[in-house]
Length: 301
Image (tube, rainbow, N blue to C red):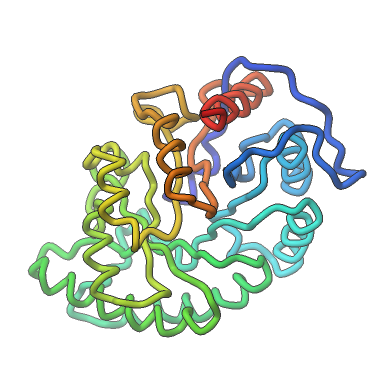
C-alpha cells in the first residue's frame, strides 16, 4: 500500500456495460454477492470521484475504498459519504497514518519513542475521519525496520504502540487493520512482512481495535499458501484486499486462484469489504469492462 498505487489504473476486454443511473439512485446491474470495493481510478473514464462511485454502483458494486481519504477536505469526505449512503454502499478502508515511503519512516520499534507518539496522534485524528465516512476499518502500516535494534525488541514496541492505539479506536467501534507488505517487489525494509507476523502482533495487542489487513497480493509474493494462512489467522483478520500476482491487476491476470478464495470466503460467511487493491491490466474503458467481467467471473462460483 502506498499513495502512488491509486495512479496505477487500467483493465481488458469484457461484456458491454450499462449506462449510469445515478440520477435515479439505483443500480442497473445485479449486485455482487460480496462487497468488492473499487477505488478512485478503477473507472477513471467515467468522471470524477463521485461519478465513479455512481458508475460502480450501477455495475452492482456495494463498497468503496479510498486510501487518501484522510487527506481530503472535510467537504470532500462528507460528499463521498453521502454518495455512498445514497447508493447503499459500504465504506472500506482509508489510511489512518500515512507512512513516509521515500524516507522509510516511521520506525515504530526504534529506541526513540517520538515516532510512536506521532503515530498515536494520527490515530486520534483519524477517528473523526472514520465517523464522517461511516468507516469501521482504518489501514495502518507498522513502519520500517531499524537495523540497529534487535527484532524482538522492535516487535515488543510495535505490540505496545498498537495496544495503545487499539485503546483509542475500540470505544468508537473502529478497528485498525495492520497491513503486511511484501519486501521482494514493492516495500523493502518494512517491519511487517506477512499475515503470520501480523497475527503475532494482533494477539500480543489483544484488542478488538487491532486486526490484520490481509492483502493477498502482498501475501502471495512474500509467503503464498493463502487459504491455509487465512484459515489459521482468521480470528485476527479484519479486512481483505485482492490483487493478482504478478502485475497487481484484476483477478485472472496472474497466478492466484481467486475463484477458490471467493468460494472459501463464502464458506466462512465473510460479510466484510474486499478492497480491489490493484490496477487494471488494460488502459481505458476496455480495461474497465474487463475489470467488471473479472469480478463477475469469480463472484459466480
